[in-house]
Length: 151
Image (cartoon, rainbow, N blue to C red; front, side):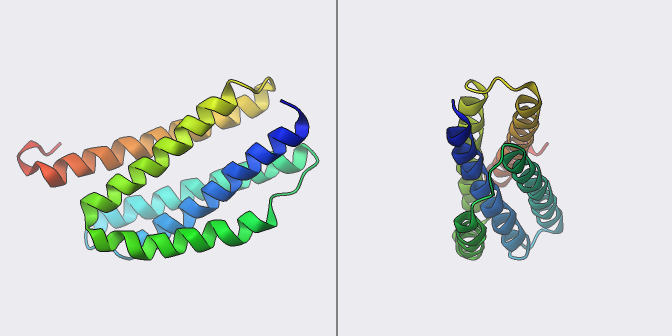
């Protein structure tokens, strides 16, 4: 993968992570359960860390984080963050799981194409965070849909 392709791919992640920051922040204000609200807010903070580390990687490669992503990522996240909760907490979390699974698949794909060990470490770290978010969301869905099996 050449440098320009890599910058484009990192800009995809940059936009996706910006979306997730706003999505989880907005969702945290829409849920009634204080623990879930705090988990969503903490997830947004972790995603913001991803925004920062991806931005730094793009700049290290001589690129600039996409200005379109700066606008569309947060806007789409904010809109979805206000609309998706209307479907109920379980469905909201299922939508979050799908988003996280897409991010994980994309991180795995990029990892297979990157040789730089420093960038690989960053991608692995972000991938693991996405996996942890997914696991929490799945566990919460299971609790909501099968209350007799609370963890």
